[in-house]
Every structure is written in structure tokens, then in C-alpha cells.
Image (cartoon, rainbow, N blue to C red):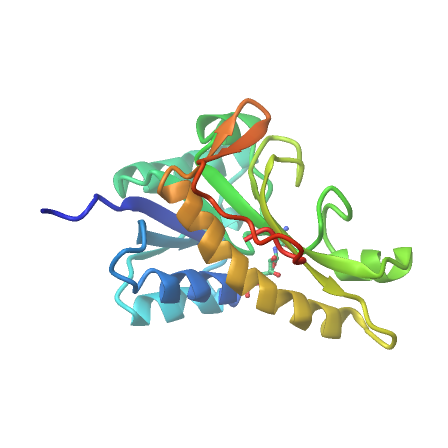
Length: 218
Ligand code: GAR
């Protein structure tokens, strides 16, 4: 019997790509439901590009500074995604905001990881925002992307304690461990069809088991 076809994904990065690397590691498993067909960055110098290329993954740099506006940059991205036959877009520290038509073209087929427990602390400097607000739990969220920034339906979350003496770096490091755990798992749910967008909600297959009584949803 031939194995089920894997979902062709593109991972979009702007920096070091540690979340990309966690997906690369997970995708080594023969039964992982996604294959990384492309890694793309808006910054040619992004460290993650070299890491992906060294592993034999197709990479592209589409430098946003070479485009006169957001729409033309998004059109260039779309052309790369089309050429590679991409079915699902995975944002992993991709720090550009898309135009609404681009996002709408990928409705239900584009996911993001954000370093806070959404809907708290959208945008940037989330760890500073959390420390300023004095929350005692902070974390990360995987969500479908919608035109409004960091507002899409939530697929998975993980929480960590905010400890006395934490600074933005110590909090970021504690949360990154959880990002690397939940992103490959949430991506697998979407790629396999076990989690899908239905209007403004995420619908899960009956056999998806959420660990009760824990601080994470996967
Ligand atoms: C991660 O913490 C990710 O959650 C965050 O950027 C970092 C990228 O690190 N993303 C955002 O802030 C998106 N708005 P990485 O390049 O090592 O994966």
C-alpha cells in the first residue's frame, strides 16, 4: 500500500529559524503528514535560509526592500508558492504583514506561531508587554492567519509561568521551548486534516486528544 500523500508546505522566515528547525526535525518522521517543499525569507541574510539549504531543502529569498509596495511583494511571494505547488503556508518568525487579498487567498491554508497567549499581547515585544501587564502565565499560540493581525482562530496554545526576576529574554527562552513542541504538532493536525478552519472556528477531528489538566492544548 502506498503511503498517504504528504501536504506540501512552505515555511516563511525572517530570522534564525528555530521554529523552522523544529518542523524540519519533526518532518524526518516517515509518518509526518507534511513535507517541506520550500523555505522562503523576505531577508536574504536570514540565518535559517542557510540551515535549510544545508539540509537539502529548496530555499528562496524575496527581499521586501526590492518592491515598491506590499501588493507587489505579495504577488512575488504568491508566484514562488505557486511554482513550488505549495498547499499550506507556515509562518515561523516571518515579520512582514500581508495584504488582505493575499491572506484571503490562503484562508484556512496559512498558519502562524505567535509568542503570547492570544488574544493577549498582539504585535511585537510580547514578552515586554506581558511583564508590563504583570500576568503570571504567558505562552505561545498557533493560529490560522486572517487579515487582522494576530487575530485568527486558535489551533493550539501552551502556557508557562512568569517567574519573579524574569526579564524578556528569560521569558522568551522558556516560551521558545514550548513553541518548538506545539508548532510541529499543530501543523501536523492541519496538514492531516485533523484540524481545519470552519468560518471563524477551528474544528477538530473526534480522535484528537487534548491532555486534560495541563497547561497546553496539544
Ligand atoms: C518566535 O518566537 C516566534 O513566535 C516569533 O518570532 C520568533 C521567531 O524565532 N514570531 C512572531 O513574533 C510573529 N509575530 P525563530 O526564527 O527562531 O523561529
